[in-house]
Length: 418
Image (tube, rainbow, N blue to C red; front, side):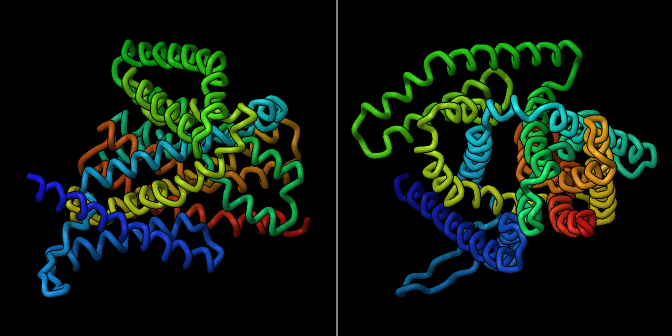
């Protein structure tokens, strides 16, 4: 029994080593070509999944006179899935840490209008596109699957946009500030909508879930505001290395646990914990450490796991790649048009010029982390599964690549004469 456990442990260690190596290697290649390293990590997962599934799995090599069989590298390991899920929690925790409630209050109506338009329009267009594909008999999306697709299209990732605006020296402009503020707000809206989507079913179930969400936020926000500072004070009083960090991570895990147990998702709890801790003046002491743990270990494995999952789902999808191509094209068109029109309309209503509204809309096009979190969370909660689930996941990966590569080109075009 002990021997079996040792073999399992070291198989997982080998998987982790391969995941980190491929994540950093491909991330560096994309970085050198001035593309987001995250894209490289996802591609690294796709490559690693293919190598493990098609080439290395079951091969024997001779090391110091011992015959060693390469273990399963198709990333179906429940242990690797577990590490990837922790990566998701860290991403949402960091997102919460970086939110300043005081700054949110100062963002004003412009960012709020842009965010609402940037969530509502892509979401509605995404759901309607699913209904149209059903009518054309190309897919048979359920209401739940249609809602997940709509949610995938809502949240913006402005890392690429920020870098492009910095290159153009317009990050400090009204357009740049609006994009940054709107991205924060639409992430929050998307996370709340994701929590509601977990209970899609009967009207009563959805309403009851809404009540539970409200109760969870009231109780845990209240507890956080009242006692979290006192708990964090222990980090100052306990003279042990990184005690403050340990307490903050404990709060993250406890909040994630209770959020999951009340029928939400652990990521909701992680996000709330991040927001609460982020308002503490001592949070700056742990943010660097949290990012080191997250981006040095858990988050790269999450992105590699997503890329490798493309291979894991090839067995469940149809033999033809045409549905994936069609869905990718539809999602990409809706993603781009939805943000340009939705965010642009919100900016226009808030009083920005036509040119500025277009610039804001184009700047909100990229999708990245939250889109992956939404689709993988939907998988883990069995909201999407089977062949269609695999097609949605693969199409989401391609959507991220397309929007990330398209956005800088369009941003530069709209700012060309500024």
